[in-house]
Length: 234
Image (cartoon, rainbow, N blue to C red):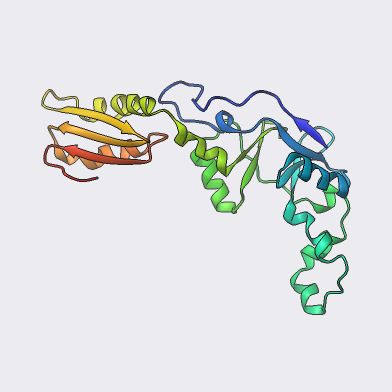
């Protein structure tokens, strides 16, 4: 078992400053429990227990990610340890039976591993996880070498963004853009990620557009309106 720890996690603010999309590198875990392709079964179990992880990227001799091993891959060894599965089970659970007889990471791993680039947006990573129905993605550089791992929980870190930062971005990217006319006096308030736009607007038809743009700001939980002529959320 080896560990990759290239740098500390970022604070959650994108490298480009306020308004820049958060990227995978901003929220990923750089300290990753990994196993080599030739790792023995007991070494993998030991890593799961000691590092308290449910899955580990598998790397080759060059450090490139070649697969991933999860607790689900390890469990068939115990499940079928003292059983003699019938023909139906053999046909239905062939993959698990093969894993039960495996002894190295290379034999057990799911390959190729689904990975993500560090400069992918959080939305891209979330869509990839949802599409593949996985809970985590190894983060690799251009040559396929492991630099971190991103989980579902990591993607939720964006909702810890400070209310003041969210309000600043909504004023700059939404209010100033859509309601620049002198007749518009729009206030922005944010509490626990919920944005409220109040005041008066010169063109009420732009309110639905403002709702879409505000919801696209990272960290926004919901958008509500208290604008002249508008009494409820858009």
